[in-house]
Image (cartoon, rainbow, N blue to C red; front, top):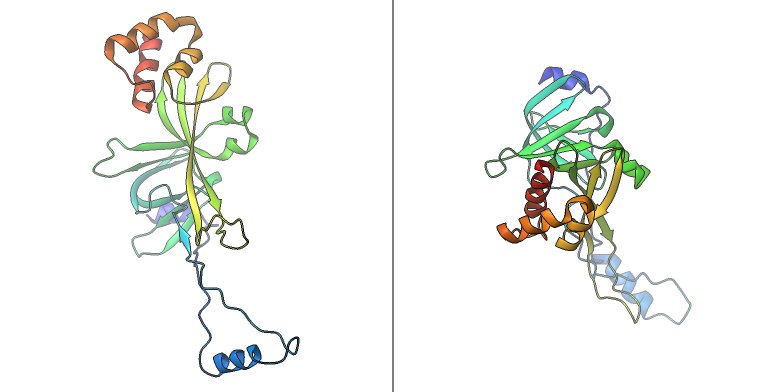
Length: 242
């Protein structure tokens, strides 16, 4: 673990806190009540809005600490406790003393999150080819769903931040900010060809134009659900076996 700390000398401790305004009390409350009863325009009255209820959702891929293996350059570090902050595209690392540090993406080549139910785990790495779709994706971590000899299927986890909206006559009535998952799947082919795909049978066959008939028969014979990640993985593996 000491070697791991030396590898990242520029680590910065990060933390986030969410707060909510409290109602006035004591003398402050009395003063506010007096001002409310004063003649119009005689003073400024502070208004307290208690409708805001905080934040719903999490910026992390998994809210719990996960065991992870991290690769950086030609070094591998195993059995670490981390969280992946999807919004900031950063790893939060907790050392054995309980101190938390941020690992910037430029220091990490890949990492695998695992627990007793995630065997062999989920591997995240950066794919330069994704820059052909959006330059900002070249430095983001994506989950490797399928890694074949010709094709790769990856999922880029993202989060959308939606602010509370409880003011105005046409508000949606949301009393809390919300962080929503926005997972996007991409199919990577030879020569850096990249296309974002929706998981469906129609889109799967469209993505494999040279073997559509064979893949169609495979899906039907095996009752493979092409609207799922597992279905695409099976179909892509079969396609590459032809």
